[in-house]
Length: 245
Image 1 (spheres, helix red, strand yellow):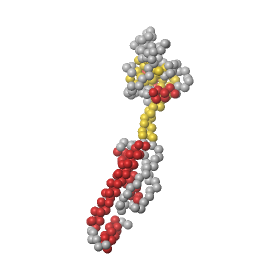
Image 2 (tube, helix red, strand yellow):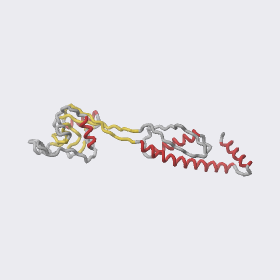
Image 3 (spheres, one colour):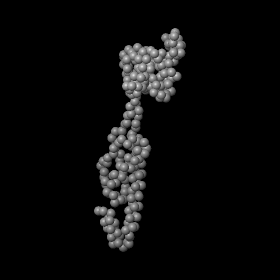
Image 4 (cartoon, helix red, strand yellow):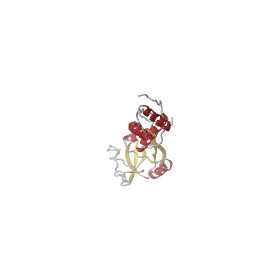
């Protein structure tokens, strides 16, 4: 039934009941009904979108690669930048354990380059207060010592290694030493499985179910995008039901 016939039928029913009502008044009542529907949809969508945002997360993760080819620190940096992202940054205990886990039981000369150098900056310019320097031992001064106890290397150790001999502790070494090294690649991981969110909307409108369904989906998409969720998602209705009052 189109709008014209619906309004005509409504006006006839009003007239039969002794109520004089104009078509313009019917239009006004229809507009008020639609406004109530829009308000109800907005309220329900706000709640549903909040639930969906909590299910969606986007994370960056570093994938580490151990390169057994021996290079100076600078050559290792160039190698990583050409083939991966950069020399590995180790910004937390978790990342340290990740790089140690890929060394296995192999003997790579005990020391492996990472991206820390000079005045303790990371090669990829990332910021972190995490450190894992080797403390004093019977066979080594506390690190970094800039070659203090090694003849000919004082103030010449500006690059950093992970020492497998000392269970992953960091030591500073001459940048011209040839050692294996860790590269990393940056990957963006988006976690969003299929989720079903229940939504109940009470409306009084001349729109059919498919029109209401389309409005709800469009509003949900707008709400999620407005709050920073990537537009790379799809929505579809499931088990749409019309419930009688």
